[in-house]
Length: 146
Length: 336
Image 1 (cartoon, rainbow over the protein chains, first blue to last red):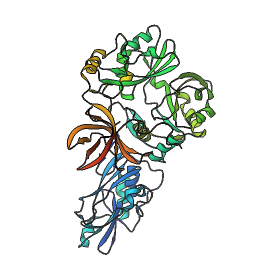
Image 2 (cartoon, rainbow over the protein chains, first blue to last red):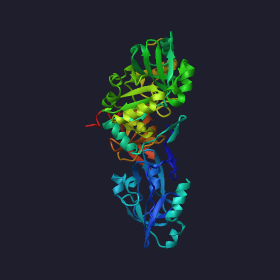
Image 3 (tube, each protein chain N blue to C red):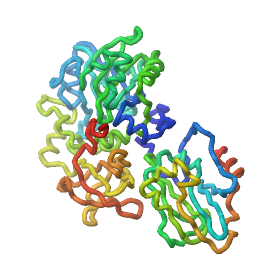
Image 4 (tube, rainbow over the protein chains, first blue to last red):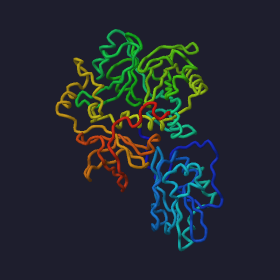
């Protein structure tokens, strides 16, 4: 059986039975992460599209507290029954909070990707780091083109 | 949907792989396994033809029974395909290879490829028989590893007490023309649909091999721990001499189970390390929904016994795991 694939971005065929949700107050990456910027901190997770493409998430490799990350640099991994996906940092900075609930309840990523399923908080010095991110309508166009 | 051996198959239905997996362990799941091949071998000499080609001994069973067997490579005894034979009538056998190996099996045993004429629907789980009973009582009555004919809405069908989940269940071969209705009838009777994803996590928990992973070029039934599949007393079968030689010198690796300390899935192709040295390689791995841990099948150095602590090299980190007896999960034990 060859359906287990390593995917940098989740590109697995998915025919979602429900409409996708992309909140307008978030910013998005082409690798299907979201960031909610507040002051000099950004809460980060993966999008509804990403969780749907991954299927049931069974394990999350969280970044260590204090890790210094680069824009598009590795932040962690999400594993489902069918694939392993890298999570990339939407912006550069330092990891100051991680969602430890995901250790025992990785399914929160499926059930609430923008809420309880958040992955970490990155603190940054320079808001310009967030300039390369997409707004919800640009991200929705990207997803509908995939 | 995903492409699989030339078929379009659902990886999962809307409830998802984990929910489908647990339904099969606790209730009843329906799988469309029409992608399995069916080769009909019939007429005088059929029994002898299969006895000479396949490694298990059909003499151990009888008409109205099913048998797990393998087609081996003549040269090295490795597994060309693993197969279920439904012995339908005295001189009629339905030989069921894996989707992608049907041509190789046809070439070895002859017969007629009837795959396109029928669908195969597997109902599996502790409540499978009560679901099947509501649709076709004769099929529900088939014994474990029995094969029986039954009629459904005027169509001739076959039922076998076989499956690939580690649970009790029934597999039904029905004419393609009534397949959709038959599937709907099973769902109406209480079975919940399950896809390829759950089929794979279920067979892995049950410790069942998958061709291309635990079986295939270079891997013999002895290495896969399936010596019981070999009809040693038969005068001849393909690959017998190579297997006898391997048995005499001893296998260089053997299939074992691994259970990870945590829930991170183990994955195919990862190296297994003992005291920092390579001791084998994972052939299939994933997350076990019943155990809540990563599990794997691995071909290991035969000196490594059950209970040994090992580590698995996974993408820059080592995952602690223990060698364990198979199956990981026994039939019916997750239901209570």
